[in-house]
Image 1 (cartoon, rainbow over the protein chains, first blue to last red):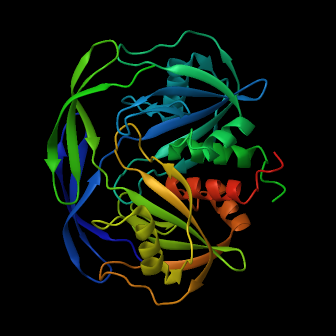
Image 2 (cartoon, one colour):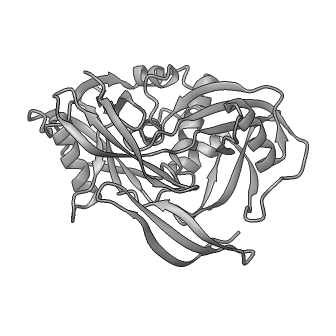
Length: 183
Length: 183
């Protein structure tokens, strides 16, 4: 099985906050598609912060795409020139006031491989400590929660945590912490 | 914590294959944002098909957004007038040739709650049977795989399965099948 061949690209919708690219591609069967659209989504760093007593630090905030209050792992887009790890540390501190001494990369994920170029890197932050108040923009409102992994699994099953990035990050943590060992 | 108030909406990019909406919203602090963009992403049905001998049926295909061959659960957008469950049955049959007698709804997920309106519903299909050849468009190329849950967990940990929709669907199945019972 082969990848498609990119023949040309141009911006189809070029807004500061949302960019869509129109690609002309050649398929393995030589068919040409001249209008395949992809969202140029910025890359994301997501952190699963664990306190010394084993609780996960999550954030609850309004998300306009689905018009809902969502409980998720701290995450955000990179500022210019930032590495994934720097973004992770900054977003953790800004959104929760917690700090991690070290971050472990758990994996790389795609939320929408068909239609978005965006990549998310997931970090585990052990023994995080609260060191500062939240640092929020005027238009941000965030509630910080500390929840056990057992409770998070129940909340995912009940549909109270339902963003795929966060569910996937918890999956990677459960695996890292050997919860799947006995399967 | 309150939701934002939607004041007005208009189409900002209105293409058959990709639609972006520009919303004017009022925040709880009364601040107005007049240019919040969201992707009007079609809703998706995803199926986790399990064979009688306990293997999961997955599909491998090229995904242009991330320029990669991806292994994922069968899934697709609804045709006009279709229910989520009808889409799930149709996509399962078209992409794999397998059929489920019954589907159980495992949950509702959002891949990008911040910037996309799209909702995915996840179904568990037990005891699926191969009843037909694949039914693919000219431009579709799909490889069908049967993989155990244990192997899938290893593949997720190794980064070989890395789409958040599929990782989250496997999470819901592990919970449904009581793999988390002992935590």
